[in-house]
Length: 313
Image (cartoon, rainbow, N blue to C red):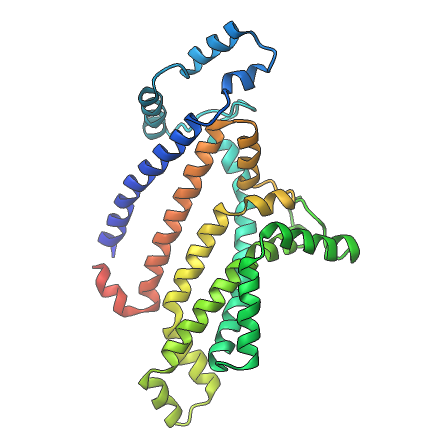
C-alpha cells in the first residue's frame, strides 16, 4: 500500500507543474496591468513603468515563470495579493473553511438524495418512480446553479422567511445559512450519484450470488443492503469523491449568489480586480485538493473491496 501511495504522490509533481504553467500563462496573457491597477488609473506612465520593473513584469515570460515557480517550490511562497498586500496562502487559508463547509454540506445533500433514489430506481426498474426520478435527476443536472439558487432564495428566504438568504457568520448558527447553498450546489451531484447508483445496483443484482440469496429465502431488504449495495459501492465512491473535489472548486457561482466568503468568492473578486497572484494561488490550491481527494478515494477502495488491495502492493 505504501508503494502505491508513494507512486501517486510522485505523480502529483508533473500534474501540479502542468497546472502551474497553464494558469500562469493564462494570467500572463490576460489583458490588464497589475501595476496600473495597484497605482490607479490616473498614475503617470513613469510611475507605472517603475512599478512594473520593481514587480518584474517587464522580464521575459520564461524568467517570470521560473522566478514564480522557484519561490513556490523553494520558499513555499505563492506571492502577495495586489489588492491587500497579504500573503496569498493566508488569503486562501482564511477563506478555505467556508468553502470546505459548503462542499461538505453539499456532498451530504448529494448522498442523502442520490443514493436512496438510485437504489429504489434499481430495485423498481422501469416503474413510474424510476422514470420520474431519472427525469428529475436530468433536470437537476441541466438547471444552472444560478437559477436554482435564486429560486430557493425567492421561495424560502424572501416569501416564506424560513432561512437566511446569504452569508456565513460562523458558529453554531452556520447550519441555517448552509441549507440553501448546499441544496443549490448538491442537487447537480445528487443527480449524477443517483444515476451511478442505479447503474451499479442493476449490474450487481443480476449476479448469481444475489439469485442464491433469494433462493435461500432472505428478504429483499437484506439482499439490497447487505449484499447488493456493498458490492456496488466502488463506482459510487468514485463519483462521490470526484463530486467532492469538483464542489471544492465549483462553488464559485454558489458562493457569489449566497455571499459566502469562500475561496470561490475570493477568486471571483480577484479576477475582477486582476489580482493575478491570488487567482494563480487559488487555482493551484484547488488542483492540489482535487488530486489529494482522488488519492484518498483510491486508498478507500482497498477498505471496501479486498480484491483491489492486492493490486496496491
